[in-house]
Length: 329
Image (cartoon, rainbow, N blue to C red; front, side):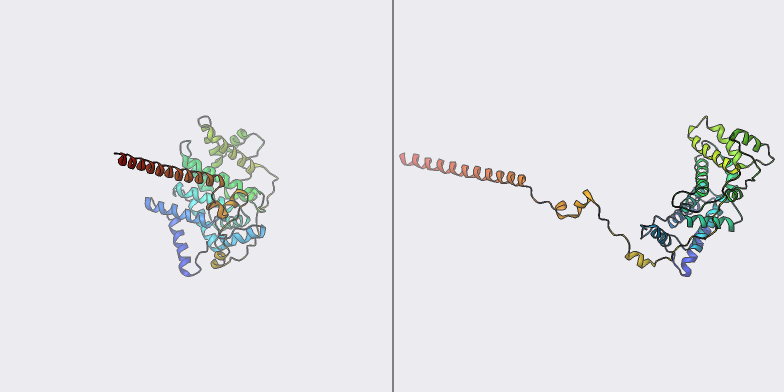
């Protein structure tokens, strides 16, 4: 997880970011972008680490040991947002970028980095929504997966699940999707709300997507869940008197341990209980001969010996009888 601290390591990250945000129709370049997105996904995944945290403090230490340093993480987040907001980028790179943001939104430190990126950059999620509103189709799996990932991301950002303190307030989300607070007033009737939004001079892409997806639901029931998530988001944006708490302070993350120290502290094996403990004994891999099996083997050897002795006796008697016949003659 540790990017090299020297100039070569920093140049490598900058080089990967330049490739990731560069727009090209070349298939090999787009394939390289997908591979870079996979690399960024691994770098931003806190479950990939040499040392796994076991307690609350251990989880904080785990973030320090598995995520890049803040400056590098902000560089990655900036490239993800630039890729998402570029309408010419393929969905094959936009979708992984949204999922990487979803991975970071699982903890407070990632929420802080996403917010700082949105504050520093001049763009937001509106270009993506406009693109989806123009290109959405029930048979276009890329649009469906991308919009579904966007809805899940916004839901993660505006809620506060167990184990997380920070979230995005409604005003901040309105700003990042360019939703005006007076675009509509929600009164528990979505159709009336969308109808009022449609009368405006510039209809918001979310209300356009509402109308488009509503037409496809009769043909494809699989869109129902996504349609419900869209309705919840629109209602959330239109409701007033909401808690507008937005993360402002940076979570304290301890210093990263050197790689050699992490390697020494890595978990090499796990001693399990019950049935798995038997595998740690020599009897499991080299079992001793069972008593019943030993008796069976002994009986077989005895019978074979007796049969061989009986055959020798019969041959001896036959030879003696032959000698007696010869003497008589």
